Image 1 (cartoon, rainbow, N blue to C red):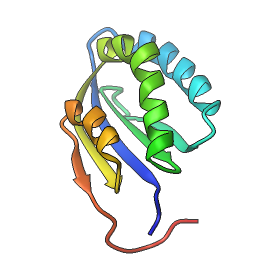
Image 2 (cartoon, rainbow, N blue to C red; image 1 turned 180 degrees about the vertical axis):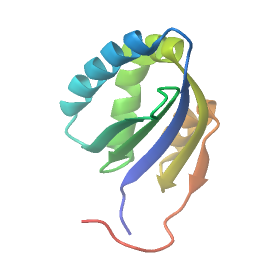
Image 3 (cartoon, rainbow, N blue to C red; image 1 turned 60 degrees about the vertical axis):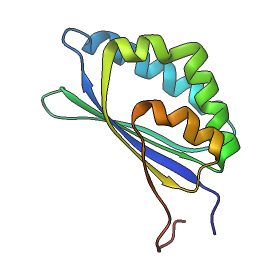
Length: 118
């Protein structure tokens, strides 16, 4: 069984925050690129620029927890000023520490059922 942990965070862009969000997103992508356990980190924006999805993949819970720590200490306040979380789906088997960190976002957990990734 894979130890990979991933999630899809769904968010609403707060009124008047799109420009701030663009700058923050670029800063967060640059920071996350330096994290060795990050497999994927992708932002998506709806055509009307009101909805944002963030898809993140980590090699394991330790890598996910390291990212969450950096997020909390460096980006969380600005992130939540730009975006309102609406749903969080977590995939795999995250550790209790990762679950504890993500529960505040109202996380729904889905265990591996089948399939593969390359």
